[in-house]
Length: 292
Image 1 (cartoon, rainbow, N blue to C red):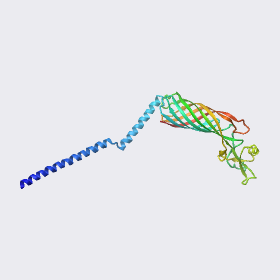
Image 2 (image 1 turned 90 degrees about the horizontal axis):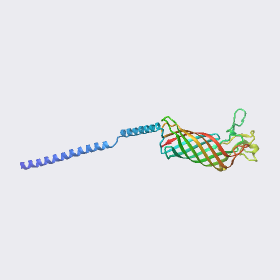
Image 3 (image 1 turned 90 degrees about the vertical axis):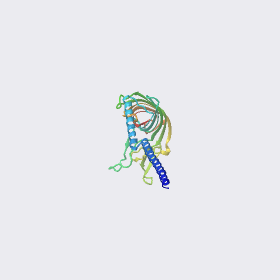
Image 4 (image 1 turned 180 degrees about the vertical axis):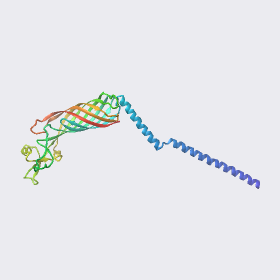
């Protein structure tokens, strides 16, 4: 019996030893596997460093391109404000690069024509201060334009360095949707309930419309929207664009050019002045945007 007991004890001890070895092996395998996985999974710090390095590399690449005088991109989006010799306009432009020197441009421009004889006046009031909004004496219509445009931008002078200026020739044209809106003023009228009346120019009301003694103020954007007349036309422009942006992914430019518009009928903006069917102007525009 003691011999059998000792045998069973040895067998039991051998079994325990094998079991312990299995546990130790499994634990070591688990630790090593976790270490390998942890090494393969990037930490947040590593991700931040990689992004930071990528930004630096991008900036360095842009600087090298600027130093070489090249502006390389796939597309650009630009917002701009134009001050014309006969009014103002705002535009949004989308550009798609075809080659290093050539870009196709698609734009939408919205603006307003101003007559050179326009002069804003204030009503006399009570002798001490003016009352109401200013008005333009003798103005008959407000003339807006909505102009879809297609054109091209051609580089004629690259940047000598990153702080230089790229010069582009821009030529474009398209249809022009003219919108003729009647101009309203507010006059004193004893026959009305509140003593005032808003009116536009008509032959019957010409005396009231042109009598400064009756005019109280302008009416702003209140009237005339449902009376607008559409005047279709075409337009074209040629300009020089000076891009002074430091990096390729930023558009910072000034554009100087000439513009012509022709409409299907004469547009009368001011009374007692010739109506015009063809408009010429020069302009300067500030352009800001991004490239990708």
